[in-house]
Length: 205
Image (tube, rainbow, N blue to C red; front, side, top):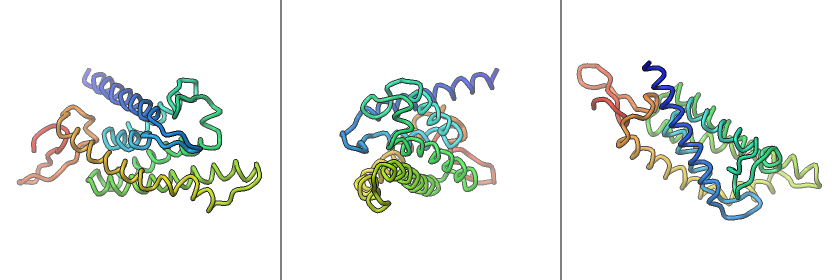
């Protein structure tokens, strides 16, 4: 019974974060690679839900966009978007989630660990998305990797770092207030006497 209740809560958390990613994708400044709040939503999803459940939410978001729900930037959807020239940046969110999951599973969920995991994930996102984008434009007549970086990465670095910082701040505040978040997202510290107590999500301490 308790397991069923936990699974139901986890699905609710994931559904909320999928909705957050959709709404943030609609807030966009049009460009060949649109400026959106989508990356902020992905960062927040991983910080709030943890690597396993956060990656599941990202995969669900991509799957729903793939089958036709208008939840990508500018209300777009479908295989043509996901596998188009800028689709590598969407698929890269999934790799970011997997890297975050692995990194936090190995090293814990302290704030500095989360920051390092998100930064590494962002670099992976840039690399994968840029190589994907370059493949399309090389086959269509030519854009080298430096050109892709100046076109698709450099304008986004500062905004993405600001989104990352804001996501960490918001997630930290939410975890202090919402005491029923998934247990895996709670930071654990040793209390006097050696027992472990949870911070930022529920329990004592």
